[in-house]
Length: 201
Ligand SMILES: [Zn+2]
Image (cartoon, rainbow, N blue to C red; front, side, top):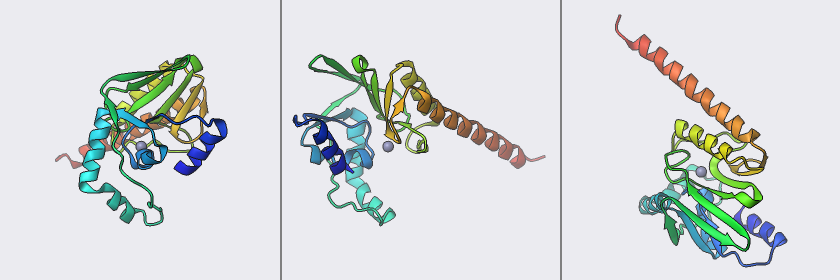
């Protein structure tokens, strides 16, 4: 997929890829960093989590869990540049804002990339666009809902999700939010019912 991504970039420009932004630490977003030959950047927690994964060899675990996936060529490449709040890149006449969401959401180191002049936001995995199902196992349901509200408040024309199709307007954000609210409320109700059943009479 990373090779496809690179050849898609080459259809648009032959300029060197100088910077690569990792929105979070997950392997499907970081284990091909070395193919881009660029300065990689991420939130400080993201690099810390990658160091931790290297120490306990999470890649080896995934190879066992998903034997149908070819992991050859995958590699840990911790980021060369980390930040704790935000980073601004000036590229020609465009300002590129990279911002830490500030609380656990998809992970504990999520950043999104906002290009205000182009009205574009790259959400990383803070947005899974339908038909992809939001995945918050390493973060927080309430944090993910809050993050979607924050992304919606940017009022961009185009949201590029971490998974799923590009969203024109905010519809995909609202769909993912509705899903997470449904899960939160159903889980809460079920937990309360279970608690009442367990209570001694
Ligand atoms: Zn992810």
